[in-house]
Image (cartoon, rainbow, N blue to C red):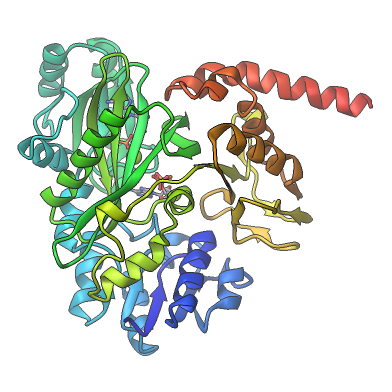
Length: 463
Ligand code: ADP
Ligand code: ADP
Ligand code: MG
């Protein structure tokens, strides 16, 4: 087993990794920027080293600083978490060159999966269904137009290196594609340092269904069930549930097999996620992307499978076989996650970082909260706005929904606005309760949900 791991991340995921390491008797070295000196994960790590100023480019993305600290503190492994350097193949390679075990797939696998246009081509070769669209990247506006004309509008122009819901533009006709092309290219360069674009047909009213996968260095590849992540705002997930309520046993089996085949097609090693779009009317699914890292919403899979996915990452990186076989994976009950973000839905989701004046997390049977916040701490404006992940697990979906409602009622965060109230409204919406919502649900229902919250608050104020 690994002996000492550098955690190249921050916030709740650094804490999650640290806890798994401690349980496995692995020492932890935390790194932090000048904005994170008071963070909980910094206080709980065996050692913590400041690696630079607040902007991520000068701290959490500074590869040389991270590698220097890892070596100087005698680490043998590096855990990248999610975001930051977790999907940077060159960083994975550099860790290897320095004699450090990168806790994730090889640099080669990360590069293949990380370029969405390359991944599409590989999946097609492996016989996995992909959305109609360009065969690899498009190199000019004329080519993008030709592809769009062939597959039919509406299409999406997508950044090949995109992530976090950014770098995706909808084009309903050739005029829109013309005006979007140059902008999308410039934006992709600015956000991801890579202006490669590709074209995908827009699947109308789809569900976002993803499969958790795990693969070891002995050739074993399994999947740990599915998640429905269709409650999204601007292509970013807000509420997730596991398993996906809508999947027939037949589709679940087909998609699970496709997920394992996708992992094999890029020589996957580690835990990861294969994302699909599901067109329920046509009963068809399409490969979307592979995320070569631990996912924000991994906790709900842990709740329904009983498998500690971070521990599994540590085992795989240490060269051990997977702790279970496909036949031993058993999905039990239903889990839901709400992402509580420091943002104000009433003000176009303006980020609202600030000081936590009072904090109370829900607890009780079936409730799990992953968060780096504590009373009196400050949520920094320099990084993403995730404040807490509320998770529940119950025998049935309806019980899980009720548990999440009461968890949200109990959850108290004073100091800045969050999206907690909005999530609460969603949990009462008939479409959510029926479980047949699509990725279009939130954008379509947002005005009414927000209006309802506003009126409730006004009535409360009146007393
Ligand atoms: P998940 O699929 O696990 O929900 P998200 O898409 O929400 O993941 O991304 C998790 C975190 O990683 C977010 O902070 C997001 O901004 C960041 N992220 C994901 N992909 C990229 C990328 N290609 N470049 C920069 N940040 C990214
Ligand atoms: P990211 O790397 O930012 O997560 P994805 O390719 O996974 O990018 O897409 C993010 C979201 O955008 C998906 O979850 C889905 O809601 C939407 N999306 C992406 N491609 C399509 C498509 N072809 N048709 C419809 N929706 C799509
Ligand atoms: Mg995605």
